Image 1 (spheres, helix red, strand yellow):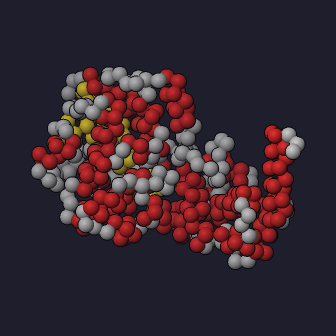
Image 2 (cartoon, helix red, strand yellow):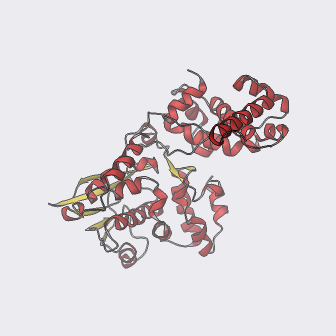
Image 3 (cartoon, one colour):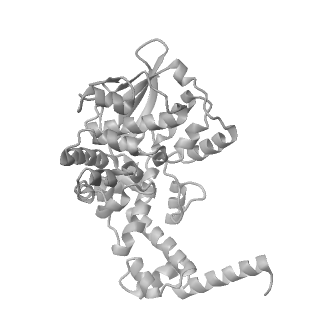
Length: 382
């Protein structure tokens, strides 16, 4: 199988490195979750820079110290190591002297940061079905955190339990409180602004007076619990939602189509990082592994399980980018070569012969002729 075919298979049907696609999903038993190397969308940091600035802090300095590129904060299409986000929130809370920073961040974020799993849940029949959607497909947003619905502490009660890939205990209080605040925002979007869970479980001691928590969460709060989550009644779970069977089915099929194989989840973030880093030089295994929070050997081993390597993925990104720039722009060939990380234009020429069987000028000419033929077919002769 060619590298291009292997990449396409790992990304899923009809997908390439050139277009946007949703990430693959993962549950608590996913291999990379068990290994503690979860990722989360950059949208998890939506509002972070604004909040820290309001508190008198320097958000970009904190992001750099955490090993997170500031430009990724707030961007759904970017991927960030889950552990680094958790550590970032702890550092920001300490640096700004804001013990409720996680709650503040979670409250100011909209449900949109979670991506397509939210509209899929909103169109379910009941709140119970919506929770099941999140249980199955939260991995489209984060492979570092998962949830499940388990029996509650009493008759007629159920508990929505959040799990972290970083261990049985949530060691980052700010992250846990942000997750709970964000989850309540979503629940109230689904069930109505007046919705209140039976209670909320916080996995650490209170960081501020209990009254602050109950004001922030609008619910009874219990501290030093085994896992973060909230208790729901049977009546809560049976609440009807704005069910749209057609839209719900389409969205669920879309989410199901992104279910991962063991290591294929890495292909998309590696290719996205390669595209971002190419203009500054060809990224190495070490460069990309550092951005993903993985040891270089771990990254190599997991890609090798898919029949791929970082070199393969960078080559495919270069090919797709070259084809797009040659077909859609008038950029000079020397500039395209530099954009792709080549020191000389001759290297681009050799690569194009290998990829397309023709020179860069030949690729551009063929693309223009093809476009002209399609236009003539649509509009007729001039």
